[in-house]
Length: 98
Image: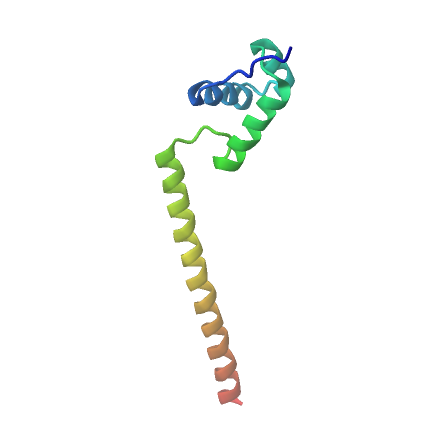
């Protein structure tokens, strides 16, 4: 007879992922200690990494990080544009002096 599929709430999953990320213990060891399938725990850890680093950032922190990254990308775009304008002016001055 097949085993009944166990369900874990989000708080438990986050706690287990935090154990793996903060202690540095292998996924296999943590899974064995808690009686969880190793593949299941590996999936949780990889999803947490994709969602926001190692899963230790809160939602407001993730939102702020995304906002700051957008801001940084916009500043970099302006810097590149100004550098191109500066280079054009340098070339114009070199031609004008000649």
